[in-house]
Length: 397
Image 1: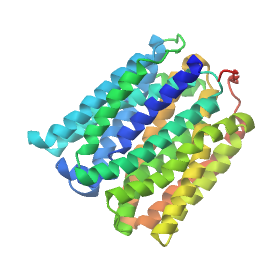
Image 2: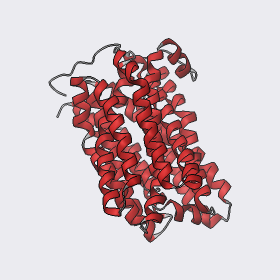
Image 3: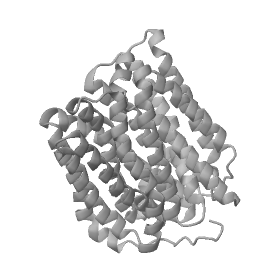
């Protein structure tokens, strides 16, 4: 196995491990928040928002730092270790007798570290040869499989002990730090782009606003399912944390397994059809989950959502890397992750507020409708985008 191919596999394991660690907490979120001193949907929303707010704030910082230093992996290791320690500290909080507010502060700190490990591992994949669609497909495969396993295992662990997912998440991030030490750092020697690089990058390359907009809405739907989806399946169909985790996995499994082949397809046919047509189908499928009359039909629609999500995700990430030279990939993908994290945050807020005030069906209609709307509004813009340079694959990759 060639060195680059081996590194692609290791980096996929790194991304996978980070996603497992994050999603482990979702199925039993209500029980975990209660154990940490919080109560109800509002506290669960705050717990998720605290971490994602840190993602939004620090993704660009890590990207600019890696481009300026010409190094990625040392920062992946540091981010993973910081995230692991934050999870262990959260697990210890109930024995320390402190309030829920302290847990929220730790979530912010942990999120600031964890986004570094995640964002720069994905950027390191983009540094490899073989085509942006292929590399982002590998990232999507790892993300989806990590989320699928995290949903199932997290649900099971939560039924044993609400704090168990925190300890497991910490262990996985220690594994991330260890794995990252074995990867060759191929980061190009970049300019010192600074913390404001994303804003300046959008000014100089306004075309990036298109993949950023799609990334925002796509991750909005993910945030919606992480919070409202779990509460929906638990309250509407009487599932426990383990059952909710299994239903989430019905989305994440096809979402994971199809991203690599569909990412390669986007390299061959272009980004337009996967991004635009895929987004329309994805939005309609989300609405279908809310309209489903039974658990079986709703679970079946989750599989459909996963299939169309796999069509959209790698093509959208690849589109962001298509539009910039290689020495700006860190900031370009950092910006994409900022947009995605803002979407995730918005998904919590829009989903939680709409479900609470209008009901679950209205929430599904709003979120699915937003996915369809971005495809319709941006259709012409996507068609007119031209890549900065086309990556060419090698036989080894």
